[in-house]
Length: 498
Ligand code: URA
Image 1 (spheres, rainbow, N blue to C red):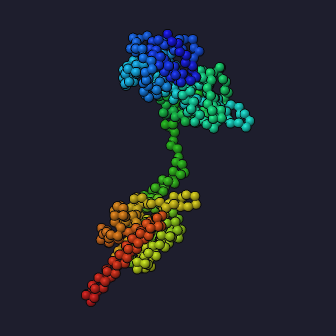
Image 2: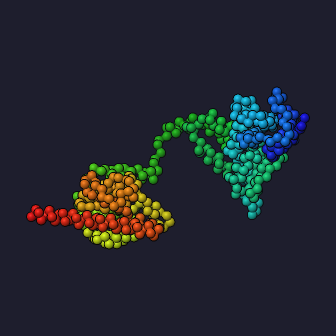
Image 3: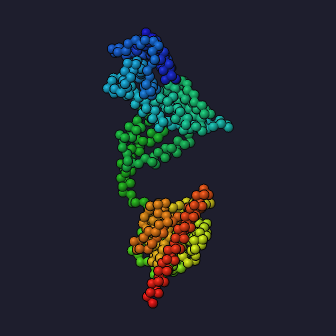
């Protein structure tokens, strides 16, 4: 009979080392006595029919990874038979490598139950350790101490969790078997000599107040509570002394809650509610449009059709002659436009004016506007970073675009970029496939789809930017040609009719 000693601290490494040695020597499970630490009991191997024969020494040991994971957990269990049970399963695995997949096998079943119990105990330790602040040592980190009574030997397993979570302080967790200390980032384990006395600290009263104020009497479920927070842990939980009183009064408090008048809405909620009502009342698409361009130009400043008005400086309406033969539609005002209150006056606007004039278009002859009238952005430090308007915002603002189209009555509209194209045609397909083409709106107004000048400014590759610029210029030339053509046709018609 071989007698093997497994220490309480470092049990996993010791069991692993010893098991390997015994297997190498071909010692069958029934011939091993496992002794745990300095306890008096000798844990005899389970005396069940030996189904493991003496292994020939020197044979390659088969240790599936799943077994290692299982064994590392089971080792923490407090049941004396765990060492022999694990060793026996290790021996049986040499004959049947799929043994762990047999949940009805007695050994496997026993190990799985132990595994579950250890996991649960480790989880409870993470949840129920309550530190108390210890006296500070001058110039050193704050120190905390806790006394905890786990059901199994989980301290070594759980200590790294506390080291990660409370890395910026020194602490000690004492348990009946092992005490772990964490000093200056290093974990150390030792056998506990006596029960430490950690007095109540200043935060304990605060913690109890917090606990009783989050305790909801209307949600009290005693069974669920005691299953999650078993009573055996209560004696080391400062808040537990409040539980009997809180539960006793729960029914009465619940009744008081039911009878109490509703509390008034916080101020911010009132403002939000008023704003929502305000918005609803102003988002009626059937609302009659302003009677003139001038009236629209004023009314747009009161627009609450979508939330973008909340952060923008002002609404930016279109500008230019109305009626006009050509209407240029961008996405939304940018940072400079938002401050100036005029469309396309920033970098994209200057580039557009340059390319338009190269293409033979005079900006002052065009009506220039945007699909969305408010600047949408995200503040980042002192800067306001442009954000694309979403489908709903585009949709809400179409009311204004339709109003402008009605007043401008253009022969051609140029949609600069995807937002404008979507707002004008209702089609959200990418510009790539549509650029340079003329599409018809439902009201038959032709829309020439092209890229937005900002796309040129944003393209870092010089050659690619040059190509984009040429494409925009080509499209604007096309717009100019279209206008010439339609002008000629009108002149012909006028001559014929005269
Ligand atoms: N980009 C736009 O789409 N419109 C402007 O007015 C300015 C930049």
